[in-house]
Image 1 (cartoon, one colour):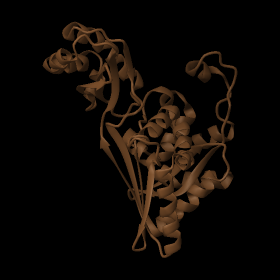
Image 2 (cartoon, helix red, strand yellow):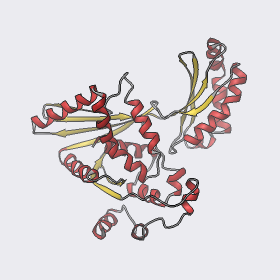
Image 3 (cartoon, helix red, strand yellow):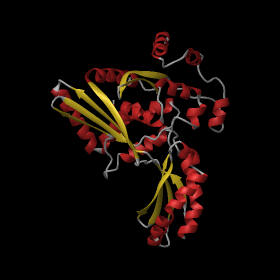
Image 4 (cartoon, one colour):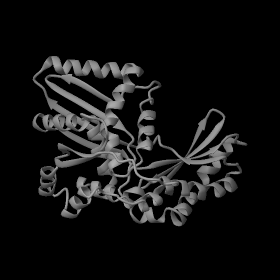
Length: 336
């Protein structure tokens, strides 16, 4: 451990203060727990490790991972080293908003609702951005759009909020509660449920890997295994569990809501009508290419990321500047 600390300090991933915190056992009292949950009696600690050799979008990363399963970090580091020597990892994000839902179980007149909602949409957006999401607007975010969906006999109004560097659950729910009364009054309907959605397909994180591979048999076997997971949900479940082996430990280490991301990823895996793999791999002309594509909604400010000293340490270790960068790193690790 002493050598690891020295290497991470040399890389600029840890400070002397960080090392003192880690070597003393980290959290040693219940005060933090009392701020996070109810009926606190202690802590259930997970080992915190570092996956090495990650080179993503031409930048090196030390990847903090809180996980109990053997071989995950070793396999990740070995594969990342191989990719760094023989290929590249690139990432990007498609879209920039999170989704909240206002559900009307039995609309009086869905056609009238659609017309009135369009008429008043800009007013509703302006009022919400002035009263609730003003802080997000100052950072370039805020409520961006309102759309109506028809789900069987229900009407579901979606709001689209750019949460910038926050996970966004609290602010989205506040925006929904604020919008409930004016929408009911202006659109002559009664809203039943206000809640955010974890199937956040209006902001999707994409990671791509390209590897120069001189082993045709290996490349073809990887593609066959990928196609198996794409077609068979029984295989896809285990395939995706392997992907989440890379994703969940980073979410936990950085104080993000791993349950929300899990729900979104698995729901997105059903987007084509059946449960399928969340990654795809193809081999052609001695090139192995892989892609991960799914919603990864994370934050670098607020919540546990602000309160938990180890989460703050891990974010500093990663050196990510914004939530989008964190999401892209997480997607890349999942694909690796």
